[in-house]
Amino acid sequence: MARWSYPRPSASEITPRGLWLSRRRLLAGATLGVAAGVGPRAFAEALHTRPGPFQAAEKTTALQDVTHYNNFYEFGLDKTDPSTRSGQFRPRPWTLSVEGLVAHPRVWDIDALIAAMPLEERLYRMRCVEAWSMVIPWDGFPLASLLALAEPLGSARYVAFESVVRPAEMPGQTGGLDSLAWPYVEGLRLDEAMHPLTLLAVGLYGETLPNQNGAPVRLVVPWKYGFKGIKSITRIRLVEKMPPTTWNQMNPAEYGFFANVNPDVDHPRWSQASERVIGAGGFFGGGRKKTLMFNGYGAQVAGLYGTMNLSRFY
Image (cartoon, rainbow, N blue to C red; front, side):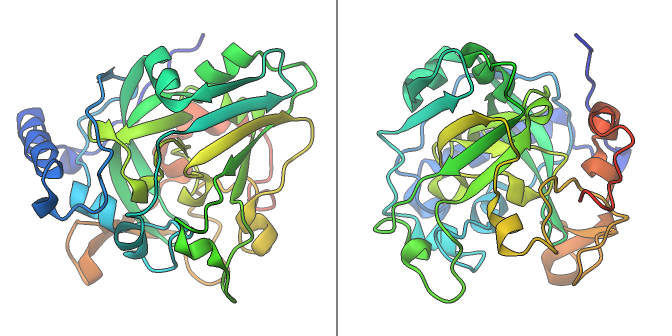
């Protein structure tokens, strides 16, 4: 198997590890108290993780920002809606099914799955299609590990994901002119899903996922725009044909199936050449920096796309 390396950040991005660990301990302690204002975390528990192969001492986004500046349309359209409107959501008990073109379909209890998988901490860049970014320490396990247990059949070409539908707990699912079609659905090519960078995250900052960040399990594909990271997943299916995806169905001219971060292909309504770094100060609370092709993970993933025209297959 190829040995993958994490793209090293610039010197200006690096935080001394001692300071970073001290900050983590402070933030972890704060999350245990309601007074911290981190939002709904009634189910937060510490996770036992180990540093993953893509760990780096890159400057992280503050927990307050990670948990209070979110796109999670099941709870509303505003960035603060997930943190203020997700208190009634219950991520336990929870099951995740793996089915379709596999030799061993199975329905997992989420806590049994977490216990069965060695959890890793992965410090990943996250780039939103709206041209803002964060750096988040996710806790989880490679999606490939779960798919390997199911044993994909030779006819499987894609992986389809489906999120939960609970309008009584998720007010954004109650309809309206701007509502998406539910459930939220996403998909990857099988080789993308099996790539070592592709993660099923069950926590961040060493604790189980907060409701507003996709509890209890979400997808993280760091070289793609953030909307590919489907949250609160209930079903994973291996299929032969390219599956429908929510934003591609909503507006295919603006949101492609692949959604690779590409500074050379602008969104029809804004440039993708640079990004606003949340928590970095500056205009509207975010300094700007140049966007990297594949979000800086080109050395690891460019080979997946060969001679594909990335302007056409965006």
